[in-house]
Image (tube, rainbow, N blue to C red; front, side, top):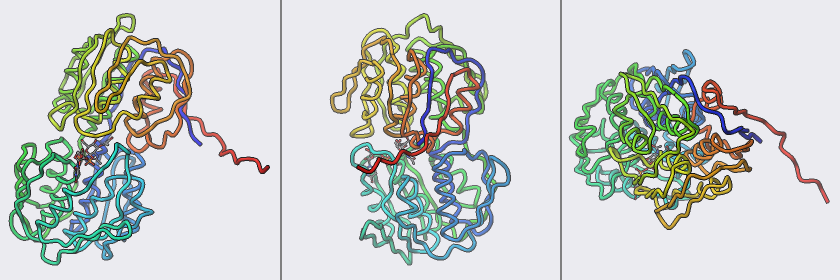
Amino acid sequence: MEKLLIEGGHKLEGEVEISGAKNAVVAIIPATVLAKGVCVLENIPNISDVTALFHILRELGASVRMLDKRTVEIDTTNINDPVVPYELARTMRASYYFLGSLLGRCGRASVSMPGGCQFGVRPINLHIMGFEAMGATVDIDAGMINADAPNLSGAGIYFDQVSVGATVNIMLAAVKAKGMTVIENAAREPHIVDLANFLNSMGADVRGVGTDVIKIYGVDVLHGSTYAVIPDQIEAGTYLAAAATAGGDVTIRNVIPKHLESITNKLEAAGAELIEGDDWVRIKRDPAVPLRSINVKTMPHPGFPTDMQPQITAMLTQAEGTSIVTEGVWDNRFRYVDELNRLGAKIQVDGKVAVVVGPSKLKAAPVKATDLRGGAAAVIAALAAEGTTEVEEIGHIMRGYDNIVGKLQSLGAVIELRTYPNEMPKAL
Ligand code: EPU
């Protein structure tokens, strides 16, 4: 069993390099299945979701070779059997992107129902509706989603709810379909734009990304490509929120400041000082001066990202007054709040709203990572807590944060990853 041990009360100071974006790369890796030729992907984050996708590619018959720590070469020439079974798909959500890409390549795909963080029900009705509109027959049997479309064709698809995953899956299926596909009320996140840029670099014709209408003109062949993944908006935001919570002076490098605007605006409103350069953002906060309470509501891009909601809630435990945090994307994304309250936070949740009263004097306690970003929130709160906090179930955190221990240590945090032997219960 692995735990993080974090001694709180130290300011964060220095510079940290932000890695490639998880939610971009988890769409781009399955997209390589569509290439006739070899793809080289640069700025790949070293996270367990990426390792899991490489595993799926290899099991499908692809060759996956790291050229250096951040660059991978993927050759999907030998993929013939478009089946991703449960053992490979269950750890993560993005495994279902193989549905779109295998359907586009082979005209059929069978992929297990995906795993991922638990935020209440995570339906896939919009993905299925989109595939069906393109002429696919889709059924779910024994936990497998089976899609069949010998003649996938372009279609007009309207989503009645903005969905990142459904937008990605339809884009993947549509780039090689016959004719034009129009997605209305499409997601506009930076990772959607990044996926489209990658597909276009392979010879696809995807237009309108970054707006809510995406047009995809199907092409016959996509070739291999060399492509660098964008920096991770949420990892960047997490380090900014950590610095705002613990106090200090931190510069995050290799970022696109425009992608961070919704986050930096809130951090400024809460009293942190922010300075921006071309590809860096610096945050300063004096820990002796409490932050100010603010209200935050999460929304699809360009709104405040739901994937930063737990981290900013952790930060607001150090703000004077009452802050209201409203979750506008997921039904149940406050499971981590119990863990913050174990550290002494005063947060009450009612449905999709959390009321945070601060500033709280946090004190170390054993806590667990309830999910990826909930785990990040626990780490942030621990950085501000008196004493040494133990964070358990950190596998969730490792799914999405590249070298979080080393990066926080380089900023002066006192944090350690400790491995404990698994204890077997004694026989009675
Ligand atoms: N929804 C439906 N039907 C569908 C699909 C989605 O009703 O067929 C609903 C969901 O229940 C939710 C909303 O639409 O209420 C948005 O879900 P979306 O499909 O956008 O989420 P996702 O694609 O499953 C991705 C990210 C999540 C992030 C959300 C929202 C990946 C791999 N995951 O999930 O990231 O929270 O978009 O931005 O890209 C994370 O990184 O921590 C994470 C959970």
